[in-house]
Image 1: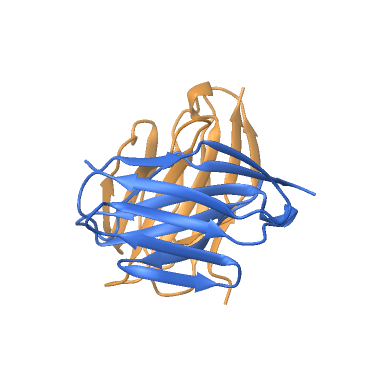
Image 2: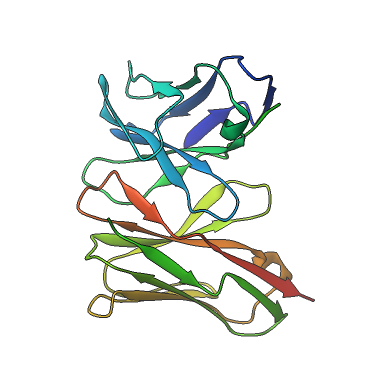
Length: 112
Length: 109
């Protein structure tokens, strides 16, 4: 049972490049979320999904896209990377009707 | 929107000391979480509670719903406890968490 798996762990992008951060969970959780963590701030919600085919924006969605074609996977796409997107990104999942959150190991992204 | 405040922001202790980290929130919640993040590491859930008290080894978490306050205690602290401790709450929607900014704990040998 791997839990929540994020790839890659580290990434350096040039301004304007695009990329996809992968997130997969093997716990059959309906709810999945993406957060970013910046120094001096709490984790902030980027996008979330309540099930396959259903996604919605969080607190800081600009510059990011998501899709949820399967229960297991919830990728986060950066359309045109900007230095302001330098951050640590966490994916999380939780079961239907439950509150306990399971986090991935994080992706440390630097945009130069 | 729920506001989550943690105190202190930074805490330095000597090995063996008793540690308390506090968390206050502004609006009624469904559940409160205490999370741990080691430097450069992922986020691990320590506790989830909606009332009373929970204990895992040297860690104890308490919550007072009426006062909208929770505490995380570490007894007999150890250098391996050095980490950021994050408080987070579920409001009305169980897929949205509001996070505090974290408390950086350093335990010196």
